[in-house]
Image 1 (cartoon, one colour):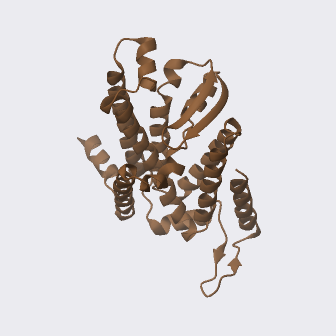
Image 2: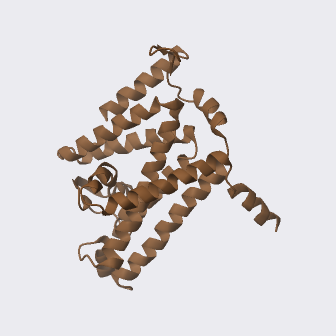
Image 3: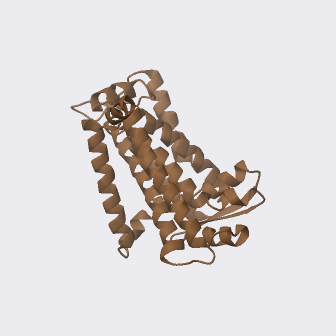
Length: 279
């Protein structure tokens, strides 16, 4: 009983967390609308195409990655040899949902969002190397990097927090809808679930798709729960914490000139901007 009461207290959102949940809910609605509206769905392409899970799981299981090819309609295709296929095949769905869940949790806190953006920069580096011959990948990642740098400087990192939250929600929703579309709503013979069922038998592709859908949803829910439990700071506390963690220059209230908090702040902010732009 005490554990249940303590858990309920931990997951009960404060005002800042409630606002974050409301924003996440709005993201889900907006993404759902844009996803199914012709022409408007192109807005989601830069976020929809950031699919790297196959390659990273392949790398971790000693596969040789040849290339990543991106398509606005179908997402990503990874060419690799070796690795452990029963891990690499579901990595596209489950990896996206796991990464999305981590970003959702980080979206509850400004400093955590800063860390998430640096991790994302590392992902971008690997992706650019594997897809170095794909001009679409370069354009997308340069655009995403520009947005990330911009949001570092808005509201002391608050804008970055909501940007990271959006990427997390988008990744989770992409994984959930992709599983449904490829395995449950229609059968795609070239889908990862179909290949998995063909190689390992046991269950048809729709069953594997349903299992992966449940796991992806669990990741989504865990991302929200971790954010609620781990990051209880309100907006003022987050601003104070963010001011001392990879700080950025602040603007004068009556002008446009920049006042650095310190030389270190200038150096860190400039280095972050240059690195992101180079990515």
